Image 1: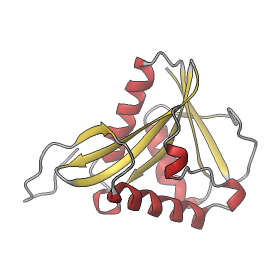
Image 2: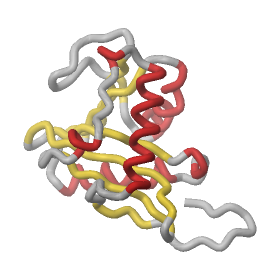
Image 3: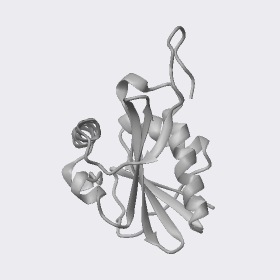
Length: 162
């Protein structure tokens, strides 16, 4: 991740997060609010704090010193398939490579777990195009719905063979 010119920064770290901090709760509240604003209710698949605490989900935060830069999660769908959930960069830290670092971390973790495939759902509206570009740059391809998802004009499904 790059530093902004003239600022002293510590090395960002990606760690498993217990979802108890007020900063992560605020970032996820912003995430949910923006997802609701850009997707119809029946097409909004972002998880709240309670759902992210499910045992099949590992949740990470990216921090630099005490600053929360972003977050993301990996949900185990079965022994060979994982799903990316809740990828988010804090607004004041976009453009620094936070999402790329976190996505790389999640892909590496999925490989370490022995998954053969990693998938995700994101929105189809223009608001979601930067996310789609990020995933495409990292080898994800568009695919049909997976797991319990159904065909939906407001959703885009992507997958990466590991």
